[in-house]
Length: 494
Image (cartoon, rainbow, N blue to C red):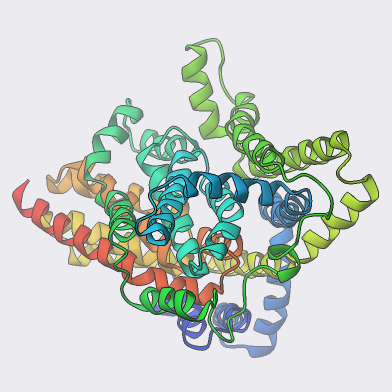
């Protein structure tokens, strides 16, 4: 149990509540972090203030955090290069050609529906890594969505809602390997079979994708998203008045270089390189930790993905894509070396606000770890549990931990270690408890404004971050509410 008790909940709740209320994300995170360190220092404001400053510096003591910040800057450079090279313009022309071949009747509505469907399917297909999926969808489809007057909030929602759910449903990636590692620690000698047996009970990701399909097919948005779509169609405003996109206009609105051919390959090849490199680097970085004398290559490769470094793999993937892009554009004579260096720096500068936000989010996450926020929530929840309520309560607690801390993986680690022995001792199907812990982690991470996937979704779509959270929340809550009812029903039936 956390020695700080209820006080451990205060910093993330203040940060999240204030951010949603005021839309001042940096101020809200700063206040939440400061309150947390004041609590740790026993109410001493001066010491708490000094420790708050040190907490931001300490973020860079973790190599994974530093890699993620650098990766964010590299993404800005890549976006700037593929736009200036005519790759984005070429991809838009390619998609427009496909759209123009559709039926003339209800042409605009059909085009809007098809583009949204393509964007969602792209996110689902790229299930190797959630952030890569989000970045690909945002980068590829943002100009097309803008052209069809589809709001940036809708793009952010589609990118966000097709990433983590697909990574869980198709767990042949680092997510699956990570979960299997947690199951091994709980004594399961066949972790893959256990994970796949739990998958049918993991209702939230299936429902989240189902709602995406329903919204695309019917066009019946609800809540704040309905107003955002009406604004985009009727007024031509892709973002709301006063909204602050999570990416600089210098990057999101960069035009292709005059006088060059617009080729979609100049966008597709670097993106595909980035996608392919991700699983390869996970295997490479995890291979050295394995005993390679036993097992087939495929089994060992999958194990290596679980041991590999996600931050190293993502950073290397983006850096490789940058090198491929620079070489591709130089060979074609599209851009000179100095011009590409200047463009890369310009792209990085447009990502500075996101990089800073990442630092703030990491600092809050470290603070929550210090306060043992997740452990406190998990421990106090035990008092509510009965065998029939285990799945529903595990789901709710996982939701709250992930929402408060902004991390699904951290939630998996906390809740699987609690849910499995609890289910076994109470006679509840452990597969159901495992699914509830995983689904709750995905839901909370999906909704949290301090989650890295939520932040990157706002960045990739050039949307206002708080507007993305607000427009996505009703859809996530709908899927989460139905999931909770299903766990309640199963808890009494099984």
